[in-house]
Image 1 (cartoon, rainbow, N blue to C red):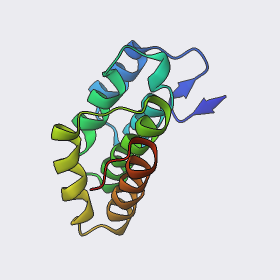
Image 2 (cartoon, rainbow, N blue to C red):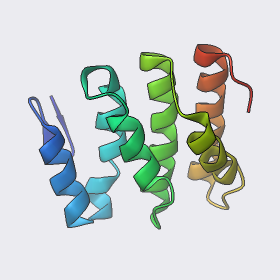
Image 3 (cartoon, one colour):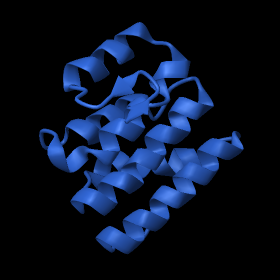
Amino acid sequence: MSMGPFHDGWTTDDVEAVIARREPHELLYVPIVASLNAADCPPGWAEGICVRLAAHADPQVRGNALMGFGHIARTCGALDMAVVGPLLAAGRMDPDPHVKAQADEACGDIRVFMGVEL
């Protein structure tokens, strides 16, 4: 299966290469592939990727990074809420509707899968 620049068998090095290229049309896939596969990656790696992209200038990238926190809550049941909480709070105040919607959805997932109310 292919998702943007990623194909079956992608590695963390492939993700870092996409981040280094800084192309928003590729970057928007990074938090999705990282967070959906968080349980199979080194602990904290996917969360770190989403943290790095949560304040990106492009709203698609930013929103997808926030969505990633919800995926990680669902698949791993743990997040560093001292770091993630403020990013989601900022996302809920974002002027872009995609970002705001993804932050709201992630907060719902964190509530359901981790029992944390934001």
